[in-house]
Length: 109
Image 1: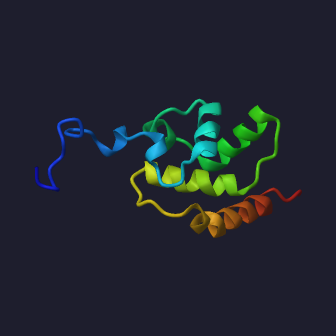
Image 2: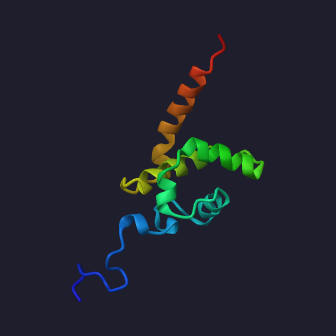
């Protein structure tokens, strides 16, 4: 079989059907976090918002997780939505910018 051909078991499998564990930034810890959040498919992940996932995770586990978890969620959600795989730390500046923006919008009157 030519290297460009797919085996019978791979034929017809769409990108959306891949497993969460196949995403670039999903290791055992993130897989556990997603399971805790009730997310079991890439399609479900694609419909999520990273800050909301982080807040829910902290509430469910009664633990304040490292903010880098938001970066991982940003990276995995972007990939689940069809973006190219990127290292989670590439999302850190955007997370920090969004947090600063959120904090500036919460100023008391």
